[in-house]
Structures are given as structure tokens and as C-alpha cells.
Length: 588
Image (cartoon, rainbow, N blue to C red; front, side, top):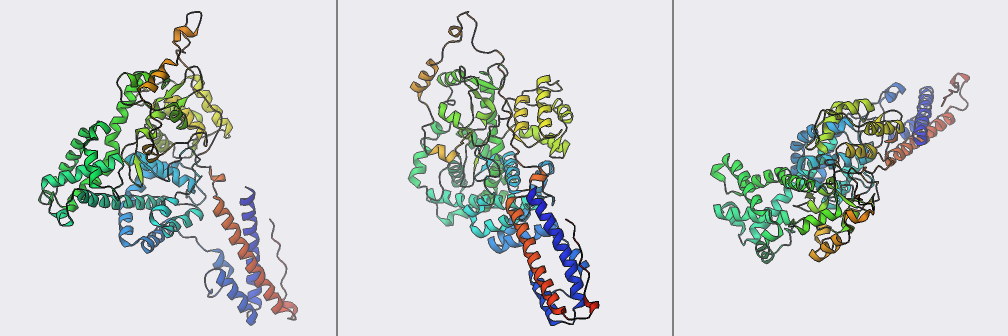
């Protein structure tokens, strides 16, 4: 607030100086020194005024959102080419529609734009809900959302110039809805290019030369698509994978990924739908590309059925209605035939899945486990396909109805009591303790509840413990990416390790000498009274770089105007008394 106040004060003083300067310029119009002063000021503002006037300068209008968006596409074309611009422009409208409800509910700057942290948070949610994609550089990885700029994604994959296109706008007040949509559309267009690269690689590893790409048989086309999916699902690097590795992987696919036959059948069905519209070119490279782009769009939601199956299986072992499975039961399920649930305690703790609020009976948080990286499947150099958060389907109606960054507790209670989930029926009456928690959050924020903060996310976990993840304080967990997990299997326990873990737990009946069970029937869920706003409220949302840049710009303007005034005063020394103007006071 101090810096923002300084900006306003400095701006006000500069305007007053400009008014004074204009008076002096008018009075010294015959002086060549006045023209020099005017020229110095005009260079600062980007050109020689013709003619200059205070009213003209003060009526300057900043570029509109549509102008900024058009300029962004122009810059995108200059840096990344006309094809990338066309692809992004074609996709942007769909992203705007998908982003609008979340964008409306997020805190924004006074220019109705999102700060870098807000853009990162928005993009992560949209790609997760749209495709199940966890995009590298956009996920929080246990840190705050403003810990890194979302534009860093382009530095790694498209170069510094591409990063600069978006970084300049992020640093100059943030992104509008359209600009955020162009960001997302540009990223998705890069995924399209990767699809082409992986498809070319599929022909290569099958020893089908380039001439075959548009002349493949039906059987060859199916083999190419299967190979493409094999590389995608198992995260094989299509740029370096060898034919020998692919052949070896084919012999192990049923053990590595038991749901492979279902994946094949689903892809065949998607292909059937696509080629129905293009029967004469069903094996062409263009049609196969179209098939695989459709697969990429739908795969996240299709494979999410596996996530739902895991959730339902865990609920069979759930401890009461806590949304948790006791660790001994979790490992016991693995010993009783499940190919899942073999993650070590260290892995579970590192990823915020292990609830140790009661050290005597550690438990696995179902929603955190489902949304953990061990349940991510397909991966590319840009993203991993992970489970789609069921909490997203609960937040969207709240955001759409409220349409603001915060709301009164009574409004939220009224909406949530009528909002069902896969495991919570509605309408219902929320427990008094839960309503009190919400009122405490509101009291912490002056009477209203921020929708995009850690405390409200924690409240949603209490309201929907099986759907909404427990939000940890940033910096207390260190989630690994799927690629990092694939590089090491140290987080997976073998049968002997699992048996040792289960044997290490005391039987409930032995824990209490009176004979009563030590396991709580209805455990109280943990509550950490520490707030973190994922996207700061408007009064806090001026980005550091933008604020400092604003101060520098106003300081530069002030210096130039002062220099102009000094020049004009020098030029008017010795003039008639009528040439002396009255000093104008500027109150700050």
C-alpha cells in the first residue's frame, strides 16, 4: 500500500508539473529553447506532439483489452510464426469460454487483469478440468502459486523471445481474459506439434519409411496408432526411443499397464468416429493425426474412470466417513491382491497424502492419494495426464453463482447445502461446527470469505472429504513429477516390506487395557488455521515488477518534465513581468 500510495502521489505531482509546463511552453512559444524542451518531453512519450496541449495529454487512453490481445497475436506471429498465431487464434475462443466463470471469480488488478500467480492458478485449473493435464511449470508442486512465472514454460520449450512476449504483459499489469486464453491456446498448439512428432516417430520405430505415412495399410495404421499410445501412456521419449526398446516393451505391456486392452478398444472406437466422416482417407497421415488429436482431447476424461474405480475401492476400506483409510488397511489391501497401494510412508508423507495428526493411527487421505502423481499415466515433455479433481465440479457452480472473489458465509452455506457430490447427498444441513469454521474465516477477512484461499479449500475438504483434497501450507510438501517417480522405484514397497509395515501396527483390541478399541469411530479431521491466498485480493494484487516499473516510469516522467520547466525558466529570464506565471500548488 505504501508503494501504491507513492505511485499515486508521484503521478499527481507529475500531472501538476505538466500543467505548469504547458503554461510555460505557451508563454515561451517563440523561444527555440522551449521547442527543445518540448522535444525532450515528446521523446519520452514516444513522438513529437502536434500541437501539444495539457488537455490532449491528460485525455490519453490506455490500449483496450481487445487492442492488447491483437498486439499479443501480432507479437506471437513475429516470434513464433504465422502458423502458431493461426493455431492459437483458432483455439483462443474456446479457452475464453472455459475460463470465463473462474476468471470472473478471481481477484484482479484495477485493469481487470490477472497477476502472474493468478494466471498460473487459472491455467492449471483449466487444463486439469479440460484434459486432466498437469502442465510442467503450471502446477504448484507444493509451493505458492506466485513462486514462479507461468511464462517460464515458454522459455524452456520455445525460447527466450517467446517467453518475453508473455512476460512483458505479465509484468505490465497482468493478463486479460483474452490474453490468458491466447496463452493457453499457444500452449495447446505446441502440444499439437508434439502429436505430429510422436506420430512420425511411430512410423520410424516400426521401420515404415516416410513414403508409407500416406500410403499405410489398415493393419499398419493400427500398429502405428498402438505404438503412438504405447509411447504416450508409458512416457517414452519419442525423440530417442529405439525400435528394440519398443519391441521389448510390447512383450511387457500387460504387466506394466493391466488396462492396456481397454485403452486399445477405446482408441479404436475414437478412430471409428473420426474416420466415419473421412472414409475415403481413413489411413492417411492427416486423418490419423486428427484421430490422435481427438484422443488427446478426450483421453484425460476417459482414463479418469480408472481414478473413480480406485476411489471406490479405497472407500471400501474407509475409516468411518473421514475420507481416510488407516495406513494398516491401505497396505493390507495391497497384500490382498490390489496392484496399487504400495507407496512407502516417505512417499505418502512427501506428497501430503499421509495424515499423521493422530500418530497412533496414521491414515491415507483418499482425495490427496487419488490426485497424487502415482496415479498419473500418459506423459509428454509438456504434461502428465492425471486424475481430474472432483472438487473442480463443486467449485465451478460456486464461482459461477457468486461471480466474485469472495462471498458472505451465509451465501456459501446456502449454496453448499444444495450442492451434491458423488458421495454427499443434497439438500442437507451443514453441521454447526462447519458453519462456525466458515464464519471464523470470514472474520479473519473482514466479514467475507475469499473463495481462492487455503482456509476455504480446507473448509471444502471438511464439507466434501472424499472429493476435495486437504490443502497443505505451501513449502510443507514436495510433490515429485511423474517423470521423477518413473526414474526411481524407491517409493514402491515389495511384499516383504508391506508385511513388515502391517505387522508393525498393534491390533486395536490390544491398545486399550479396558478392552475398548483405540481406533476412533468418528475421527475429527485436522484443521490448520493458517491462511494463504492463492491469488491475492485486488488491493494486494499489484505485481512487484509492475509496481516498480510504474514508479520508475513516473520518476522518469517527473525528471523530464522538471528538466523542461528548468529550460523554459532559463529561456524566460529577463522577459516582461507579464511573462512570469504564478506558482501552482499541488496538494498530495
